[in-house]
Amino acid sequence: MNAKFRNSLLLLAALACTIGAGCRQKERVMDVQTPGGSLKVDRDKKTGDVEIKVEDKK
Image (cartoon, rainbow, N blue to C red; front, top):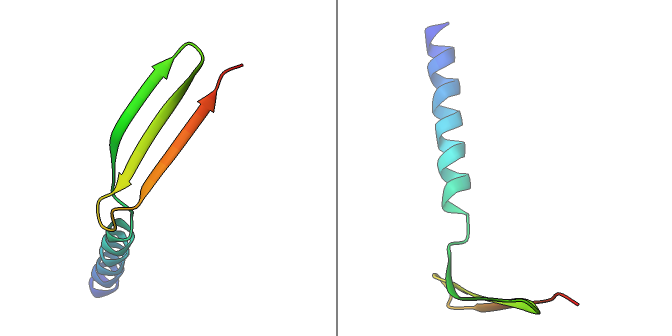
């Protein structure tokens, strides 16, 4: 029974590491808040891709 528990725990730890390594890491380059809206610019640390989000508060 102890070996079964240990194997399950090892499998769970391996799964957690795999999921954590697959997450995309982004850094916030710019975050501008105004009364009329907002602008957010994020950059992917691994690939360098840039994502721009504009929110208009009309």
